[in-house]
Length: 159
Image 1 (cartoon, rainbow, N blue to C red):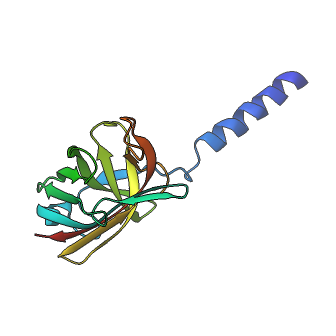
Image 2: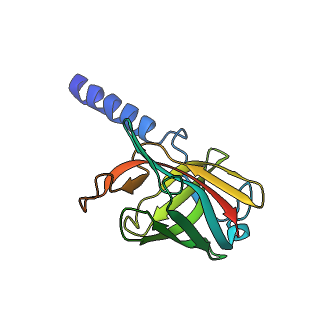
């Protein structure tokens, strides 16, 4: 009986911790500090920086271009045209992740549809910036055809 009581207490403690309120589920929404639909339109980048370790490339600073079109539902297409290679397009969806009453600007990239990354951001109606930590973007730093995970920093002006 002593063995049964011990097992019962261990099971009860495990169940208590697995059902705690500390793990509030995140909520995905289009309404946060501003509505994602406010971003609808065309944007031109003044900065399109990709960084990993000590290597950093800014497509715009190097003479290339980056532009983005955003639909009112948050879907977007980003076209990057570096000077040293062909232009390419990536797309995804912008939204807010709300967790413990805090909103985080988030993007689901189409090549990873079941995952999203959160970004630091600013938005004043005409300028949008977002910054991601490690592995929130990809860039082919050595132009060998293989994209490498990196952090990103974009500044866009409404055009």
